[in-house]
Image 1 (cartoon, rainbow, N blue to C red):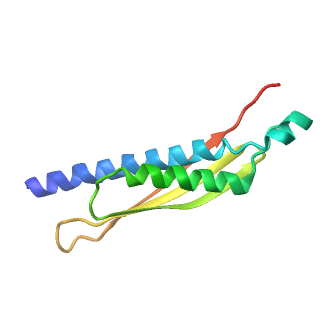
Image 2: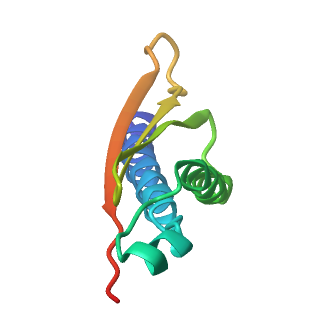
Length: 118
């Protein structure tokens, strides 16, 4: 019974951790604003290639700090939905230490918006 209780707590922790990582990734992605475009036109526009790079860097940094065993997180998509909104998707699979129990998969989503004033 103790093993089951600890596994349920671990599953809850994995769920929170993967959500935190994808939130951080999306927040980093919206920081990839094309500054020269904003200066010229006064409109916020996110550079999609930089957004993906920023998101991956932040996601990998966040999940690398965890000492969770039998846990495989991945940032599966970074999409610039509009000029100033980014959506990020991630998944993680947790393998139970209990034999015969199917792995648990988490699929999470986050969105962030860039705003600026002139």
